[in-house]
Length: 111
Ligand SMILES: [Zn+2]
Image (tube, rainbow, N blue to C red):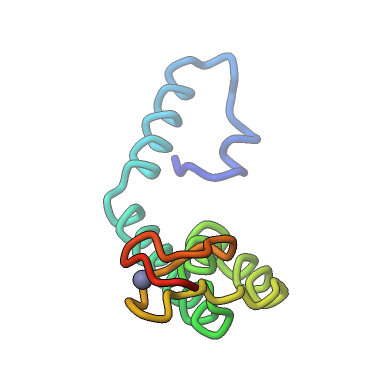
């Protein structure tokens, strides 16, 4: 007995032993380490492609998360999202500053 849709559709609901056997088969299939290993590899690979797209959109983390979570759909969303504006930097110490800041919060230089 295999865990697939045709077996589930034709399962005899009046036979508890057969149903328990089917549940055992499906549980073994879902908890198979090989399945989780390849799911992890696929997630990392999709996140890497998303990060690569994000490199050109100035949003590596955003697009890596989109790619890892949604796969090719996340890549398409990343491609349609606008290019993120670069974070403004202090002219003196090169640390990120807020747009509304008049002075750098780290070195005190006027912006
Ligand atoms: Zn500064």
